[in-house]
Length: 128
Image (cartoon, rainbow, N blue to C red; front, side, top):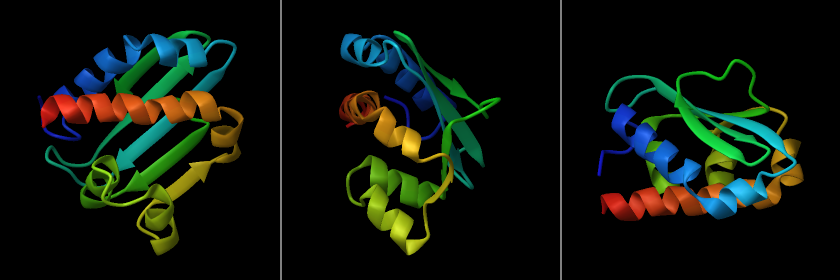
């Protein structure tokens, strides 16, 4: 499995997310775009975004034309969150994770957003 935050990893994340029936179901009747940006990484600064759109799920490299919420951090912090060694809340409170846009959309779409954690876990398990 590809290394975290590489183009190949983003492609694997897309394949897993798009194929997850529970995530597609959780996204029905909803539209949510979440942007993740890393200031550094194995391939330099990078970003990807999730689109949940009424039963359709996709992960794309780069920047979303219009994200509902965004997360920005460095590679090490993102990797620690991804591996479960650091909670997003702790990263946010320490200032190493910045949140933009409207974070309230995460509460409004909690079921779908929560399922994204399972998708990350599946990609992480395939890599380990």
